[in-house]
Length: 207
Ligand SMILES: C[S@@+](CC[C@H](N)C(=O)[O-])C[C@H]1O[C@@H](n2cnc3c(N)ncnc32)[C@H](O)[C@@H]1O
Image (tube, rainbow, N blue to C red; front, side, top):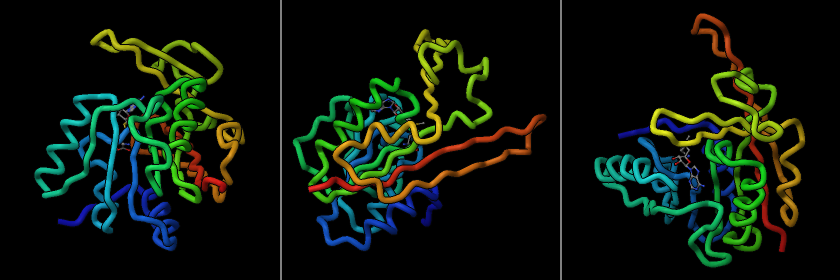
């Protein structure tokens, strides 16, 4: 069976496929019904993932079993990654850092850098303050600058964080940013249009 994966994954793959580093990769926030690690497994990478949610891990295990994949996704918190220093050539986290406060984002990206090998590559993305969801009442009250939180039906706090232009650069000390990609998606299918703006940062760990 062939899958279609989110575009940032192909952009990352096209960068790392040109490198001569060991093919092992870690996804932080790796769970869900179509776990992104599947793409890298298709290209011969040894994959590892962590996710904080048992439910998301279960969904990824069902996907892996159905498609005969071994993705190695375990329970873990990206603010304290359960792997040794310099374990991975490649690390990524998509659509997941947006659920952390900015203070925790600093911690999580620091952890991703710790487990990266020298010259290893990192991809992370952020939701932009230019998105129409930024400040939307449905995301709850503002608990910090660009940080919104509501309590869901199960009583669990759900946080969304948004970054302004250039703001994420603070997270990349010790890394060299090699590319940023800003995507603007206008969705016109609903009763009123929405704009989703995301910024991807591709970086490498300096020796
Ligand atoms: C919107 S989903 C995205 C899943 C996947 N990255 C994708 O793009 O399909 C966000 C995931 O991040 C996980 N997550 C949130 N906070 C986390 C943390 N501190 N450590 C690890 N995973 C976390 C959630 O459980 C959830 O599975």
